[in-house]
Amino acid sequence: MNSLQLHRQLTQQFSTIGVKATPHQRANLALLCQALAFSPNCHLATLALGLPLPGRRENLIQHLRRTLKNKQLRSVECYAPLVRHLFHHWPDREVNLVMDRTDLKHDWSILTLGAVHQKRLLPLTWEVLPFGGTGADDQTPLLQRIQPALPPRSQVRINFYGDSEFRAVSVQQCCRDFGWHWQVGLKSDLWFYAPPGEWHPLRDLPLQPGQRCYRSDVFLTREHQFGPLQLLADWSPNQDSPRYWALDLPADSQAWRRGRKRYWIEPGFRDWKSYGFDLEQSHLTDRHRLEGLLLGLAVTTLWMIHVGETLISTGL
Image (cartoon, rainbow, N blue to C red; front, top):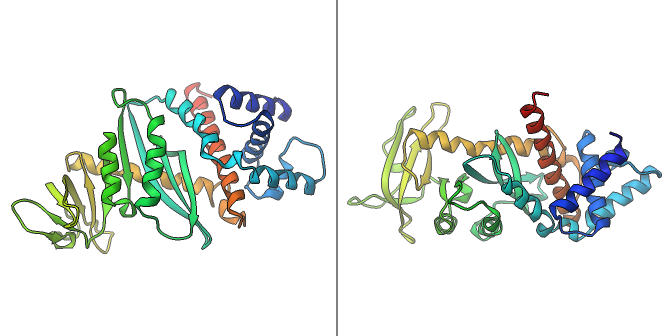
């Protein structure tokens, strides 16, 4: 198949799936994804060489810049049909959601919610924010945005995983309201209460290097008294201090294994950055263009994982 045929097929697939854009915008999105799939990085000068279009390189770079700046092609509504299509064909009995943040130098932070599958990230939604940490006001809208697209809970079990940045009671309450299971990291200075005891910070748990402990029916923070929850604490010999997690399912060795799925988002971020598209070195300072590029990265990521799954399943 030559590049023009591939471009026509991609554009047709976007139309069939229902990507919310005009035919011209879908064609431009297909051009961007095709260039991303075959280029060694996401630098515009490199992507221009992968466009199946005639013209001088500088003119092709300008074409990409206009595509990235297009308002429709950086909206979550444009990407939403792909997410619904993904879950319409979801192969598993579980959906494991992971939220995390990755930084682009000291310019931007990308807050991402994805579904992890076969130790890879399937991006679902994201937000480009000023550099720095995020809070519940940034995080809960992403959960609310993706909830309607998920399969019915009668068909799959939905689990949410996050590190201590996503420990806010309101985030956990959001998961409870949606009927999801969750497991999130906690800070050592967070106070907990296990009846009939007293309130203590997590760091007061009696734990030595190499030990792990579980607590049932605990309540978190004096302000919210949120619970009852389960508590998991672990002090790896390779760590300087213990780590703590709150979860709604029983705190046991199985919970520890399930929680490791949170780390599956890390290879996804590496795919976007130094080990793949080299997003960190794109030098995009314009937020709108970065959002447009992220849409292309997300679509191309889904495409490449689909190709890989197909090759494996067919023995090729």
